[in-house]
Length: 449
Ligand code: DOR
Ligand code: ZN
Image (cartoon, rainbow, N blue to C red; front, side, top):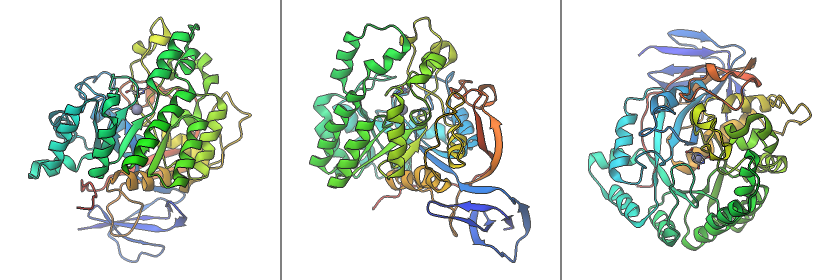
C-alpha cells in the first residue's frame, strides 16, 4: 500500500498543539513525527492546522419523514463541510426511532452515506418502547450486533418538542433503571411540562420573544432536578442535552461534585445567540429550549472554561424557510440548523474574534483550539462510545485540514444543508475547513462486553 505524508502542518489535540507531519497508509496513521524519512507521496500543508474529524452527538437529520428539511446524505455532506465526520441522530423522525424496526431502517439507510459516520439514539415514550429496546439488546445474531454498533444511547424528552416525543412520567423510573442495567447513556431533554403549560397560559405577549418566557429558565432547572434525582437513585449515566441556563450549569456543577454520573452538552446557538437577536431574526431562532438572555450565555462559556460542560453540539434541527416564515411566528416550528457552522464559529472564538456582527462590544470568552478537540471529539467519544479518537499513531482518524487565518463570510445559500438558511447569515468568521480526509470506517460501539 502506498503512503502519503502530510507535511508542515500543526496537529491539534485535546491537551496540546504540535508541529508534526502525519504519514497515512491504507487509511490509518502510520507515523507522526517531524522528520518522517520514507513515504511515497507528499502533500504540503504548511500553515494549516489538522484536527481530528469532529463528533457531533446531537443532530436531527430528518430521515425518514422530512426529506425537504434534510436527509442523512445532505446532513452528512453539510457536516463534513463543517469538519464534522460523525453525527449522532435523534429519534424524533417519522416514524420515530422507538421500535427495533424503525432503528434497523435508519441503520440500513445510513449504509449509503459516505460523507460521514452515523449513530442513532433510541427514543422511549412508553413501556412498549423499552420492550423493543430490550429486544434489540438481546439479539445475539450478526444482524443484532450490527444494529447495536450504531446505537449511541437512549433519548427522552421531559416535555413535548418538535415531533411530540414526551415520555410518560410514570415510566421515568423504569427508563433510568433500564439504562443503568444495560450501561446505556441516557440523554434527557430537560424542560418541565407543567411549568411550560402554566407559563403558556400566563403569557399575553404575541411577539416571538415570548417563546423564551413560555419555556422559562426555571423550567429547565426543574426538569434537571428531576432527572438528577433519578440518576442518583439508579446509578444511571445521565447526559443533559442542550443545557441553556445559568441555573442549570450550577445544578450540574453541584451534582458532579457530589459524584452523580452526569455529563452535559451545550448547543452552538445557545453559545452565540441571545434574546437580543429575536428582533433581527424572529422565528428563525425559535428553538426548544429557547434562546436565553446574555447572562445565561456568559454562564455557559464559563461552564466550558471550568469543565462543567463536557461537549459542544450543534443540535442541528433544520426546518424550511416557509415553515419558519409563517404569519404567526409563535406557531413556527422550533429548531435551528448549525452542523456546518459550528467549527468556523468556534475557530473564530479560539482565534480571539467574537463573530457576532451586532456585538462588537462583547469580549471573546476564553477558549482554545484544544478545547474544540476536547469538547467535540474526546468527551463525546468517552460519553457515547463512538470509536473515534484524536490524531494518534496506529489509529484510523478522519483528518480535517483547516486554514486558521482565513476570514470568510457565512452565506446560507452556499451551505450544503437542505434547508438552505442559517441564523449566522453575513457573519464574518475566522478559520475555514479546506479539506476532510475520511478514514476507513470500523463501526463499533466500544462496550465492556
Ligand atoms: O427546537 C427544537 N427542535 N427542539 C427539539 O427538541 C427538537 C428540535 C427539532 O427536531 O426540530
Ligand atoms: Zn435536539
